Image (cartoon, rainbow, N blue to C red; front, side, top):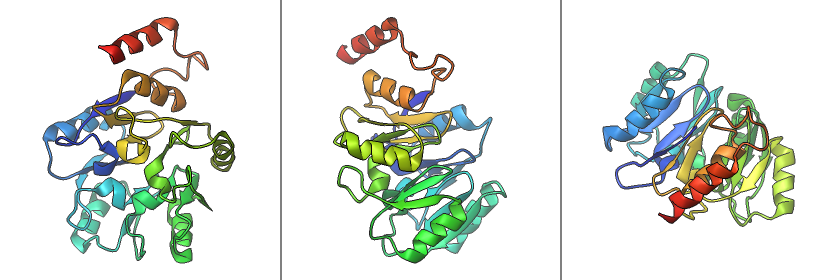
Length: 249
């Protein structure tokens, strides 16, 4: 199911949180309401952990991870690293990375099997991504943007990419990732989908401004909200009428 949330007055859910299939990190500070939205949806399945990275709250943009591992930038303090190690499952490998492009969440997009990375990422970092996250790594762009982590959101089920991504590019990326992709927006027209939402295999969180139509696209491509059981025709006419009315009111 896709759920709306906001951190203080910001709709950029993907900036202040990091969601995978084995853990969820949520920025320290802000209203407890933001944390409780994640807690209500996820706590039965995975740990939801308060965290900071290098004293900042933009954890979703500076770290990258999947169910096997978590990579954090060199600005992460020893204390923060220890807190993460204590809070996350033992199966999750946590490693600090010395990388010039330190906003790892902007430069890398991954699921549990494949990662797309910034074209200028160091070779050493590429190897660390491969080893720690256990993924195949491809250097790529999304709609001509090198910040692949900012302009796409991936799970093991599907992916949402920048709205200006061409059909050819989408087919190419889809073959690399081995999941279906669609172009779309979140937060009422924002194309920075990686910063505007977080997703794993069974839930997604988007900004409060996300329209019902955008929410429908998210639920369809990531097969959330019972859609998987109904196959391709997961939304009846009634659901679309409701979403249109919701958007117009």
